[in-house]
Length: 294
Image (cartoon, rainbow, N blue to C red):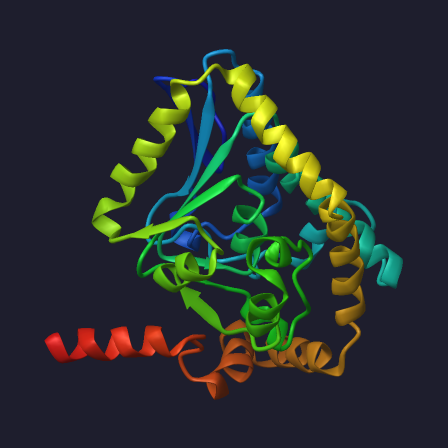
């Protein structure tokens, strides 16, 4: 049954599970200000609902989430508060967005991230805050903006994969397939796309059989442990580091191209020299094998 109306996502509760589905498929579920607010509100609604034991966070259409909405008019950034151009103004705005995302981490009930298609940039800021991630084998996960736009304003990478893989992905902007992400622990499990629904439902159904108070105690124990390891402080650091990164010359060069030639030209300037931008030889080998079979 449909329980609430949101402009940018679908919200439904069934059999102990809340389904929160990003619903801007024409934009590959790019994160607008309004969508981020809706996610925040939907998470707390689910957490406050005695029927709900766990939440499934997914995306409608061809992708989970292709990042932040770069096509939004510039004045939209003022929706997050300050409109100034200082370092502190920049950090303030990103922290305002961060407070919306942190509902996923702070809420008591577990959230399963269900990833298919693209999970890029802001999509990773979102899904890496969930408690367990299940991805399609051919999902594309990464943060290409580190090449010329800044660094992640949220940082759970280190806690998922350790320093070596965090650096491998964030020092290049290369992306990784869902299958390879499972191998390094960035996601719990990957499955063929046509089995993704089944895999997520299996996990969520098992959680739905557990008393929600017990689920909450387990989640909060682990997350408090992450906080003791600095995870919450790291999110504040990430916002400030992104503001620092915005001062780099490459970022201003990217902005000039985007303003003068358009977003497509700027993205091509940023990414073309990296080829298909995949991080592991295993991905390349699988793709070659698939092409040979075709």
